[in-house]
Structure formats: C-alpha cells, structure tokens
Image 1 (cartoon, rainbow, N blue to C red):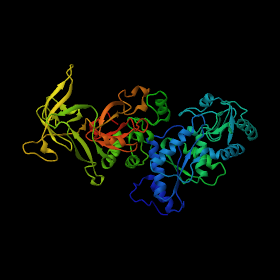
Image 2: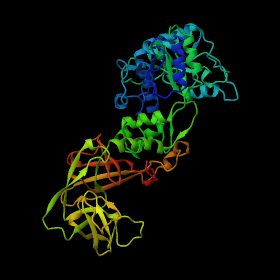
Image 3: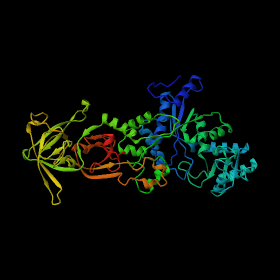
Image 4: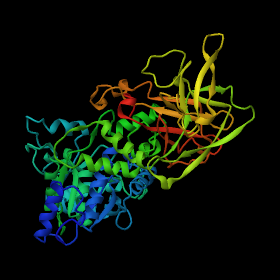
Length: 557
C-alpha cells in the first residue's frame, strides 16, 4: 500500500504522516478508531472526528473500530451506547467487526496495573481527592510527593487487592502512577490510574469495585487493538506524554502513536456534554435530540442530512490551529444539499383567505406544479384550485411602495403555477384586522402571459377547501451570543425566542404522506421536514431545517 486511494480527498497533516509511514513500510494496514465515552449523545464536534477516522480507514483500505471508552459506570448507560451506534451508522460509516468496549479489557488492564506496582511504578495513595489536588502543585510551582509514595510493591499490591475486593471505602484510596511530581506537565505528576467506584457497570455489572481512568485505559486499548494512528483533539496534546509512558512501562507489543488536531468550535453552540446534559435536565430543550441542539441526533431531527454534515467536516479541514467556525458554514452545506435534492411544495404559515369573486361558484380544477425546477426527472404534481384559497398574510397590503412585489389593492400578481389575480377589496373585523381579500382573475392567464398584464410578483398559495392543517416549528439560534460556553453563566445566554410554534399552517395535501427523513422546500419560505418525535399520520408537525437564504433570517441557525 503506497497511499490514499481517494485522490479527491483533501490532504492534511495526518494523511501526510500516513503516506510517509506507508512509504517506509511501517505498517501494512492502517487501523484507526473512534473512541467515544458513552456518557452523552454525540455532537457536531464528534462528527468531525468520526468523519476523519472512518474516512482515513476508507481511503487507505484500512479498518476503523468503534470503541466505547466505558470506564465511568456512574455516568454511562446503554441509551448512550445505542445512540452513538445509531449516529455513526446514520452518518454513513461502518466500523470493523463488532463494537469494542474498554470494559472488554478490564481484566488485562488490571493485570497491567499490577505489573506497574511490581515494577515500583505505581502505588496506592490514601490522600483525599482534595489533598491530591493540593499536593499536585500549580503551573508555576512543582508538586510534592505523597507520604504514601514510597510504600513497597508488596504493600501496594495488598492494598490494591483490597481496593479490588471492595474492602476500602470509595474515595479513601486510589492507585497512582509513580512518575515525577516536579514535571512541568501536570498530567505527569503521579496521575491517578485507578479509583474505587461502588457502581454497577452497564456491561460488567457488579464484578468490579475499581475502574481504570481514561488516560490509563485509552492508550492500552489502542495497543490491544493494534491501532496505527491514534487521533484525538489538541486538549490531549500534553497527555501524549502519559500515553507513551504507560505503553513504555508495561509488557505490550504494539505502541501506537497519538496525533492531535484542533477540535471543532462552532458559533452559537456548545459541545460540552456536561452543559448539554444540563440543558436537557433543566427542561430548556426537550431532549438530546432537540432540533436546536447541535447534537447529531438534534441535527438529524432538524432535517440535516448525512451528506451535508460530511461535506461540512470536509470543508473545515483538519489542522492544528484552533479557530471558531461560523454557523453559516454549516447552514450553507445543508442549504446546498436540499436545494439540489428536496422536492418543492407550497405551504402558507399565516393563512389569509382570498376569494376570487369572478371564479365560477362550485368549480374546481387541477393545476400542474413542478416537483423541482431543475430536475425534470422528479416529475410534477396536480394541485386543486378553486374560488377560495389561502395566501400568506404578509403577502397582502392595502398600500405599498414599488419595492413591494406582492399583492396590493388595485394591483396584480401571479399565483404560483396558476392565474394572474388583481386585489379588488378586503374585509376587516371589528378590530381593524384584515380577515379576507377579494380578487378577480384573468381566466386566460393560466400558464400564459397576457398582453397589458404584467404582474410584478409571484406568490404561493394553497386551496382553502383542500389543504393539510399542520403544526410548523420555526427555530432560531438557541443562544444569543457566538460563544456561550465562555460565559460565566451560559444559561443566561439562552434565546427565549429560539422556538416559535405555528399551530395551524395550511399546507399542500400531498404533505400528509410525508415521513421523517423526507425533506421539502416550502416555496419562498425554507426547507422543512416532518418531526420524528411529534409528527404522526393524524397530526403532522414540520421542523424548519434552514431558511432559503443566509440573510433571510439573521437569527436563524
């Protein structure tokens, strides 16, 4: 193997390293992994890592493992495991073999911990967590040795066995690697590698009373699986020293190398699982898949497609430079995808009744509409047309300047796919609100231009007698500031208008058969999809995915 098979895939510093490794015949098969912790749902930042690891394996005809780093039973459960599997599959990727779990290796990890104890490279510490923190020192001051640091291997082994057997209370002891308390790198100041947890594990049940720490587990799991390129984000750059130290001091054949890239920071969103979980717990959103969340499940429910997210990850690239990506970059990807692939429909979100006075009473006809203006292969559909229709309330004014290209008293517009009409009068209620518009139509104008009649605009409509009454959910950004995660109280930046629910929109009848996963352009409005949680055959609910144009809804995300 001499290089990537997909010449169209953008090169980056990681693929350059892989190409060099292959040229030097360092590896025969490239093996990567995506190693999420099952303590929450995946978000857009994970999507970048998923696309990178799986795409590298695909490009080089290698393999990519899905491995759950499940070392903290108090925060992990099978709901998160299942959601992660679903998200990775939905994005279009396939892991090698069965999913792996760090818990598969608990017996081996325990053995490696005992090996470090036997070599005098690990000790049981009985300092409290607060004392350990105090002893660690600061970025400018070295730490100091624990009074328990110089115990003999035999004494440490006995205490470690007591930890394992559940004979020491939680928080009263831990196993630490014996490295260097004066190291300039905090992660090397005798890090904790095992702690006591009296909590059942979602896979191993009550077998264990001790659980390995992430930094100890991660590198060994990579080594056990034969990973060639262990790819993670830049916040783990210093931890690479611990990654290498562990592998160098245990008896294990394979020593993967860790490479770091910049994590994805996206405007008007957060990627902290703790903060995302808080939004769910506080009821600010209606679950991890709330369409305002930039979790993968939230984006899916919102109407984002796998292709749009993969394209977004491709465009932002892979570098070591930290930066924040504008939300418009993500929106642009889904907008381009749906513009090409979504069929068109008409929907009136704020219906205003329009009566065509000179249209024959009782007459109904069908007008032909294109399903997509640029894709004839998607065909056409028939729309019912009659004397009474609904138009958008904002598309009518009694008076307007020349910039207003919609319906005005005494002026003409064309109804999309139908006739030229002229507004003659309007009715109002006792409060002065317009409740009905009366128009005339030109019978010979169906699908034809008429001399001396040049309407300035085209407006959409639906039949008042044959339409689908549906709920439409309009979303804006969940946060009011570009970087909510940097705020002292990120909950104070929540946008109170992030969701607007339109209860009785009037939609084309054909949308009654729409199902989650289908995308439609509501003409002149935006791209929408049925909601996977609330929409049903008897009560349709549609979510706004993205507006038609970037500047058409400044607050929309």
